[in-house]
Length: 474
Ligand code: NAD
Image 1: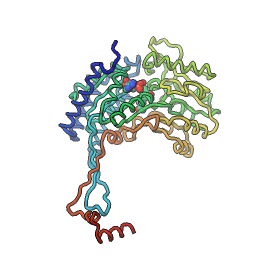
Image 2: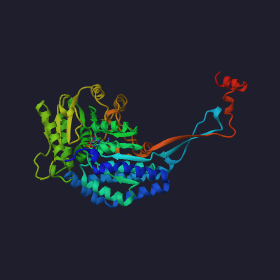
Image 3: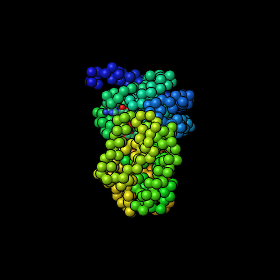
Image 4: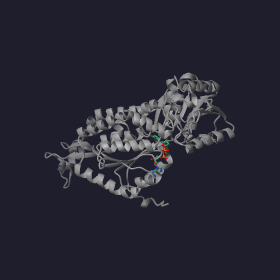
């Protein structure tokens, strides 16, 4: 079998696809506000018209995923995000007037927000709709043309999106390229005007290397280990509810899922009991519950089982909830608590991305902060406390892409907050206005006036220049 990516037919068509989009961008120019609003409305309506098809396709791609979860975690945030973009983009597009120093007046200064041109988007499988279409909508709001490379692990969803987008847009406006890592590698080597990647930290490094060859600016939305800290006297029930939501939605296959939890040693057993109670309440039929998502494929399932077995061998207590499966569903993993997790266990060394919650005991809050700061800066941090001083201490002494106080995940669905990581969890941000800026070039334009006095400050310098400089530099 031919493995040289350079000879793949799709691969060889990529440069000409980019060239066609760029030529169209250069000949047509930046789309008007109305054109962008129309494009976005068309996109929103098409998604809503295909709502049940998307629910079915995503569920089939996963092996099972509840239609409610797809509504709440994908369709609603994407369509609400589009509404937010449509409502605000006129304001964001407007030129912004800037300050001009006294000696250069009456020249005027302004910043124009221009589309970048052609944007490449590479997206992952875990929220295959939202993590593809929210960046797309934002790039369109900023006036760009877009080529998308979705994940190969969700082929039904990708096929549906590709068909939908081909009906809505000309190929020189929005195009979809399908394939796995080989196509991803060829895609990220293209001289886009911007490359927007959502996926793992490892592939993020490969993407940045590839982009560097063409000096293509990148936004990297990556992963990592997002901690949760439960303050000693915080309600165990409330914390367990929030962690069940964060850890078991989409079976933990969420970039901002709480990866592990710090629980005070006095509350350990109470927390483990409460987590089990809340998990059973949320998914009363256990593994057979329609609301409980499958793991995306057997390889990821086996990876997660290996993490559990490694922790068991190294002395952790494993608590699995609803282990007897009668579902016949492929690759479904029970919610699993790993009590007594330690740094030498694999589950504490890599992003889990599944329904496994390691618990790390602590005695003093400082220990949790020190441990977080000893590791890579996380994508998200969750702190559960009723004490403002504790919340402030955690927020001010740690650095994470985002943080939530007394809940999980909800930062991701706020349109008016930038979403992104920091350091190994990512670079740059999107959503709302920050997203509009990510996909725009802020061009400074200074306009000189006929009445300008700047000649005084240019050679040949005379007495007037001396006087002005004496006044300004006393
Ligand atoms: P992944 O990195 O394996 O794949 C992401 C995309 O990159 C896919 O489209 C894939 O085909 C492509 N790809 C793979 N190898 C490539 C290569 N060598 N060159 C170019 N492209 C390549 O990630 P995944 O398994 O799809 O998703 C899970 C990861 O994504 C987790 O780490 C998770 O935390 C992260 N994630 C982050 C966010 C966020 O917003 N920060 C959101 C969701 C997922």
